[in-house]
Amino acid sequence: MAEGYRSGSSSPAAGDLLYRRHHAATLRYARTCCRDPHDAEDLTSEAFFRAFQAVRAGGGPRGPWRPYLLTVVRHTAMEWSAGERRVLLTADFEAWRQQHAVTADPQQRLMAREDRQLLVRSFRGLPERWQIVLWLTLVEEEPPHRVAMALNISPSGVTSLAFRAREGLRRSYLRAHLESAHDDRCRHYSGQIGASVRRGGVRGRALARHLADCAFCSHAYRELLGLNAAMRNAPRTAAPAGARG
Image 1 (cartoon, rainbow, N blue to C red):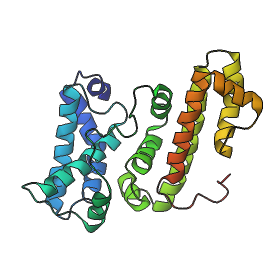
Image 2: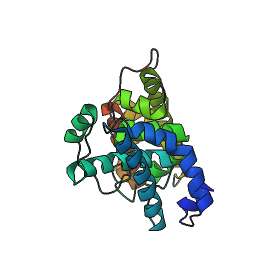
Image 3: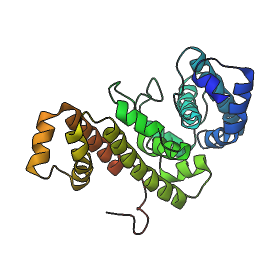
Image 4: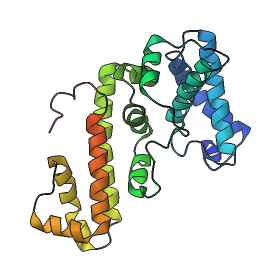
């Protein structure tokens, strides 16, 4: 039924299902943004209202709903704190607010360019829980303890989940690139592209010549470099033992 909202053909039943599925997590997260429990409840209701309205207007979440709802909560809290409502933010959230500017659409920062088809497809092909932890750590740059509250797991659990999700996204991207390869040469060099990104540079004359001649693979290489840099610079605690390398 949730697909009805994703496709724009919303129904009360779909809205009720989405509300029941995500309300508790959204409220829990809203409580980390503002001091007053009543404000948190209002933020939660407003987040659902705005998300449903966005979908009816042709926008809204194009993947999992939860990260979208949490982002709407955050943006609404900042909007209300600066407006007539004067919502009092928690000290932790206020510190985060001062470091980040509000974007017009919660999905713009990850899906900034329309030509990132492989990256978009790779991200959306991941398990929903992986998408959520990647969104919160890479796009929203949330610290581990706030991600833990949103996912209702321990901070150490966030570290482990985020590491697995990042590795999954790398593999998914390379697999999507391989499936979309124009010819056998692109398929041959796909694995070498991934290895080069991990090592921090192109290794081997043959791969270098291929990237110079093939716009498709050179674009994939740049995309994966950017993705790797984002994941490397994302806020996180130490990787799980034995997980490096």
